[in-house]
Image 1 (cartoon, helix red, strand yellow):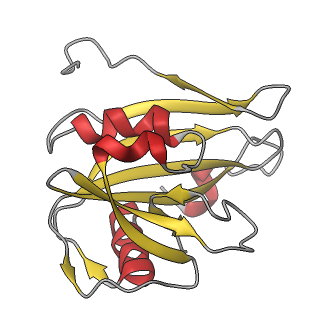
Image 2 (tube, one colour; image 1 turned 30 degrees about the vertical axis):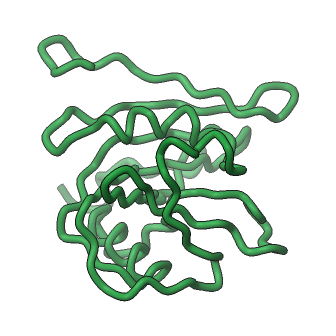
Length: 175
């Protein structure tokens, strides 16, 4: 199909594509503590990730972001889920969430923040980006080959994020 036939219409709801990556080793997960003074998530822990650039597929973007923000390379990243975030205006955000268990290289902090291995049992005791406590249990339970989850996030009147998970199709593996 030619590009002109893709039906792009700037009056329709659009999404900015992003990646979010979690590397798990044993009982610990690698998180990035946002730099103090950072516009978003300053001082809060989040996964590693960022925007998908023109010409990239989602896996290539995830691998690039992982390397840029950590110095690590992972060949076993797999898609855990997709979250559509309603920002209250156009465009929204589409986050492709990946997990990996084998990463190599020399861990190095970036301008985004400092990296820390956090025990999965200590996640409630560190300041996380608000929706991570909703997503991390699903992500930590996932294994390669599991059906990725589908989520939709939006904000209530108080500015708190609300997450809804879609139901897997009939016949799909369920947790």
